[in-house]
Image (cartoon, rainbow, N blue to C red):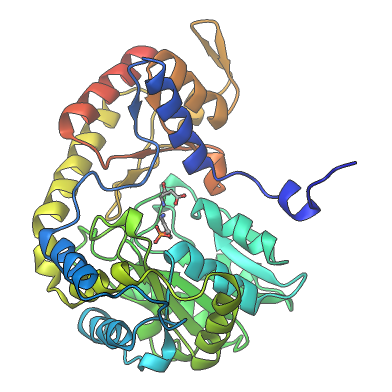
Length: 394
Ligand code: PMP
Ligand code: GLU
């Protein structure tokens, strides 16, 4: 008899976390692995945020927090949405959660019934697909390719809509492609959605500040979209706070209320100290992130330059986040060092074995021609990793 539920048996393991764990395990065995698998800044959390956390401990912020977050934090998040995105959310429209991952899970749980379709432009972030499935939804994947900078067109969106479409989920800047949708592109997508007033959008903006394009647009700020968008954000990436586990949403009040109800039965309010620290983070002028963003920018240029020297890899120039997503399909069907590369999974495993570099297969993101590198590591390690990859493919 199978002791575990169908629910868990049907759930795939997170490929980003699995590859990171594998790289860690090989390193512990003494192998010289360079891990470009996990999307995690290699910077420390800024001191002013750490100070706010220390103060919170001393001030005894040690009890249960309100399920939807401290009111001071929700007010600070409203100021942030206004300052950075031109969005006028009220505190009653904000829910603070244990990471943006929980924010996304809450949304799926409160919005989806069995069989509801969710449009996922691919490549999508790995966990969207599984969270939607886990909540009874049916992911409808809309493929894109390196040739179109991995962005969907209004025509593709229109063609994917059926009477069962409930939502569309996407990230911009995109994990894994780094693509950033500009205002015109989002307005064109919104025009399609205008005709289907029952469709809601999840806009995952967690990489908002790691953006080299010079502009950023929240789809909720496009006319007609505010009432039908849930804007997801968090402090993990921009403020190098992945372990602090704070994410949040701004959205229609009925969705915020429902997410609060869900969270109240599952985790209660998010961590008290991390919430107090997050007030300092979201109230800070994004200028404080300049050095970190500049470092990511120059790493991006370095990595793109090195990838372009490797025959057969095709890549877009990502405008944000800290990933590159090269198309490696040129190598499919080829045998290197006696290892037959049939697909992106094989390609990624080949690099792990023959270049000692950990990456993530594009399959995990709904694009079977690509693999993902995270460049959230030092220029020296990136240079060495790309040298090894070039040698292993020669
Ligand atoms: N969305 C995207 C696109 C991400 O890359 C991540 C990375 N973990 C998350 C959400 C989840 O963020 P958090 O660490 O706040 O749960
Ligand atoms: N978002 C990061 C990534 O895509 C962290 C891993 C995860 O949360 O799955 O690598």
